Length: 296
View 1 (cartoon, rainbow, N blue to C red):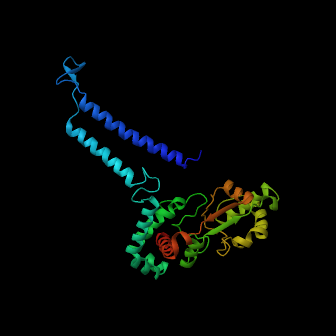
View 2: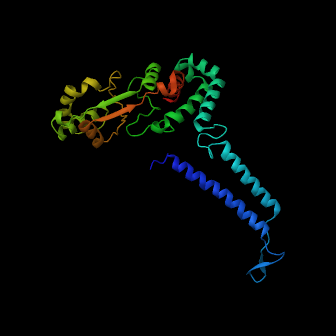
View 3: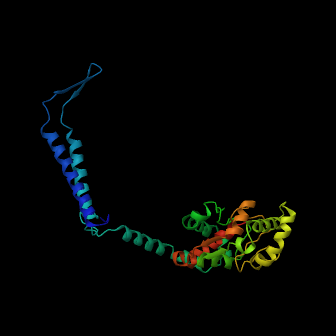
């Protein structure tokens, strides 16, 4: 049975109403069927601590009745007794939309001013960056981390390494329209795992690592034939294609020999979602300014 069907709504409603009635009946019986004054229940602790069977205090019972009345009124006014939203027609979505509308009106002038600024100008505006930091926390931190230092497979936004260029326009385009990166698996084309290891040695050599020289030399020829088209003949990358710089010792997918071999052999796929329809251009500008402000 579908959990959102009317059956569950009415089952919970009936259980709630019966619970309120039970509380009232229980309190009423206690008030009118109590024992005579100073009559005990027969329970005694520590020789002289006796439990008396007295009715509950009147003030306590009246407070309980008021609580029950409050609960009943709340059920009628809000979506408790009436699943369509109660007499006030209140819904979570309606309240959310009203708060968003109110916030948009309150900050319309400020956001309009931000919209007229460039990401570079916003990056120098402390007040704008406070807003941008909150936007980052809400929309970007899940992938890039609360400190924006990324994770395996997700770029670090605090260094000076950029896959798609570091210009404000390029960063804004990335946020607005997203990016989709594909590194194909080359093991079969290269001629097997050993050939992938040769290319990995050459790639590590490009970044200044100590490698197997003979293996790197074999990998150089394969690199220049297959890999240079995207990463450049010098390994410094191609921002237009999203080809990463292989010479700066910054590795998005891991920089160990085994990890590099795995990427060359099997390839990787990565995606930065588009946020144009989620945030709009002004908020995306704020985020672009924030990324510029925190990068080294």
